[in-house]
Image 1: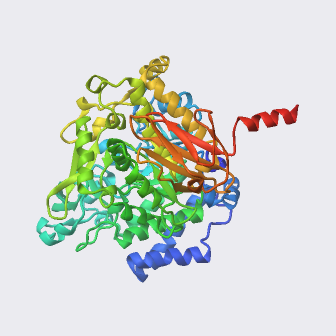
Image 2: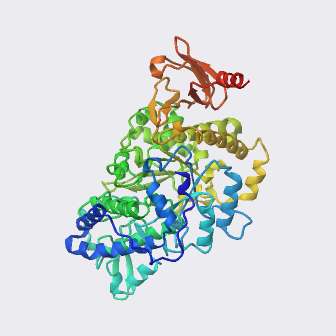
Length: 629
C-alpha cells in the first residue's frame, strides 16, 4: 500500500461551507443503472438522491489535503512488496494495558519490528455470538475492547482492514428488535415468512448452505411468530437487500468505517448477500451488482480505500469477485492456497501446487490475491473442490486429523453433509508433537517457515494470523460442540511471549527470527511486487520453484523451497532461466552461485528457502569498493 495512504485523518465535524460533492456524469450514470438493475427505474429515482446525500455528508468530513491526495493516487501502486497483513482479534492478546486494543498496539509496536504494515482487525463491534460476527451495533467499538480513539492510535502506525459483516446482523441488534416490535420501518429489513412451509422443499434443496442448520429460525414478534432467514445461525439474521433502505443504510456504515480509518474493507460472507427463491442464493448477479456499487461509491469519494471479498467457495467462483478487474474487489482471499500448501507438504511433492500457480492470472494490475494460510476460521476446503481430487482432499483431511485437527461440515446439494473446513492451527497442521514424531523444534520450525514462505512469494499480498507468529498448537481444551474453531483462537499472554523471545532456542524465538528476517528481505525487493511477473519452473517435484520479476523488469529473483524432509540437488538450465545472467546471489544465506554452460546446480537442505537474485553478488560490492578507492 502506498506509504501516504496510511494514517487517514478525516475531520470530526462536516464542513458544509465548501462546495458539495457531486458524482461525475459517468459515475452518476453507472450507479443509477446499478440501482435500476437491483430495484427498477421507479425505486432507482428515489434511491439515487439519498445515496448521493450520504456521499455528500461523508465528503464534507474530508479535508482539502485528503482531496488533493485522492487526485495523486495511483491505483497500480495500491499494494506493493512492502505490504504484509497481520490478522487478529482485538482481544486475542492479553497484556498489561488498560484495554485490549491498547495491549495490541503495544505488542505490535515492539514485536513486529516494522515487518508488518497492515492490521486486519476482526470484528471489534459489540456482538452477541460467533466471536464478533453477530454484530449488535455496526457503528460502535465493543467497550470491552476499547474505543474509536484506540482504533485511531493503531491507524497512526498501521494500515487497517475492517470487517464489514454486511450479510447479517445479530438478533439482539436494534434493527432486528424493531422488526420484532413490528415497526413498519423495519418490516422488510429481513426475509421472513408466516409459516416455514412457505419455503418449499424444492426451493430449500437449491439453496447453497455453509452450515447444516435450518435456513429458517422461528421468532415470536408483537404480531405473532415469524420464520426468519438465517444463513449461518439462529442469532445471525440475514439482511434483506431487496429493500433499498437496507442498501442505503449499509453504504452509510461503509463510509463511516472509512472515516474511522479503514484502508481496506473486508466484505465478510459476501457470497450470501442476496437471496432469491428458486436459485442457489449464492453468487447471484444482484450480489455482484451490490459489490460493484460499493466499489463505485468508494472510487468516487475514497479511491484509496480497497475492497476485499471473503468467499470460501471453489476457486473459479471465488475469483469472479474481481469482476472485470476494475469494477469489483481489488483483492480476493486466495482460498485455494491453504489446502494446496498442506497437500504439497503432506505429499512432499510440489507438482499440483506448481501447476495451479502456473495457471493463475489476474484481470488487471489494479487487483490481486490475498495470500493467507490460516485465519480465525479453519482451513477451508471448498477452494480446491475443482482442483484436487476427492481422494486428495480426503488425504488432507486424514493427515490433519492425525495432527489433532477437527472437521466442520456443510449441507451438500443432495442433502448429505460434506467436509467444509479443517479446524486446526497452522503449526499443528504441519507438525505433530515432538514426542510423537521424534523431531526437534528447530526442524519443525524450519518446515513451518518453509510452508509460510509460499504465501510470501507468489503474486499477491501475504497475510499471517497472529497465532502463526508464535507457532501456537491446537487448543483442544477450548473446543466445544458448537465452536470447533476455538481450537485456533487461544488467548495469547504477552508476558509469556516476551519471556520466550529471550530464549534464542525457543519455538517462538526461532519463528520470530526466521520468519521476521524473510519478511524483512521480501519488503525490500520489487520483484515481490503484486504486479511483478511470475513464472513457475518445473525443476523437481521436491522443490517449489518460481521466478519473480519486478514490474519495471529490472530485478529478477529465483525462489526455491524444498518441501521435503530430505536434502536434494536440482539443476536449472539456461533455457529454463530465460535470461543470460551468470551470477546469482542468495538473499537468504548470502551465498553466491554461478551459472555454467550446463546450468545452475543447487544443493538444497530439508525445507530450505533460497532466493537467488540475478546479477548481484560479492563481486559487485568489491567492484564498488575499488571504484570508490
